[in-house]
Length: 290
Image (cartoon, rainbow, N blue to C red; front, side, top):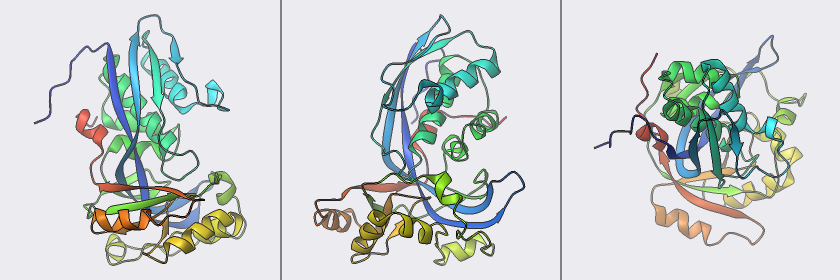
């Protein structure tokens, strides 16, 4: 049974889970420069954690800012500031981010942190905004933010923001994190990137069509990713999440994934995580549509 939320809390501690793109097709380019996609999102039980303390002076304070990320570019700060401005709230927050997920890994860590910030502050500040309203705010922060507010595994189109709920197996994943930071903007800016994949139906994905159109470009530009993928391919079908750098393979049993993880070369890091069709954030906050 879900425990009722305190209607007027002074502090909250909330998860910001990772996601995997189980498939990523680029089916066109829009007039605004963004790309039309088809992708499938599933969460995993690996997550950042964020602590929020209500301030009544309107100040937004990040207690442990990320190195080399200016405050105005910090997605948690931007999310809090945007929510404050849109709602007209005079509340503030002291936010502490416990960072576990790698940056530039394709796991959506920054977007998930921003989504958790929006959802948590909506409750902490007593704003009463619905899920659709929060997703609209999140969309302006980044294309991946809405899926973390949506909170359920989804087939997604558009820029990844038009979502259809999809029920998937929840296998064990071995996720590898090559020692490089992949720039999403750089990948999507490459002239040889495939941008005209035919659209497919959900059934085709469920029958095994799980290509990632970014893979060829990422392998060519980031040899660390190519080497890690070749190693993982020895044991299972290695796939790229988003634009990477992280790779993953799925296993029916945790023991199988752990055994491959134990063989990991010294120059690679990785972890084992369970696939989730529901985000733990959704389990903490029962958001109504609006």
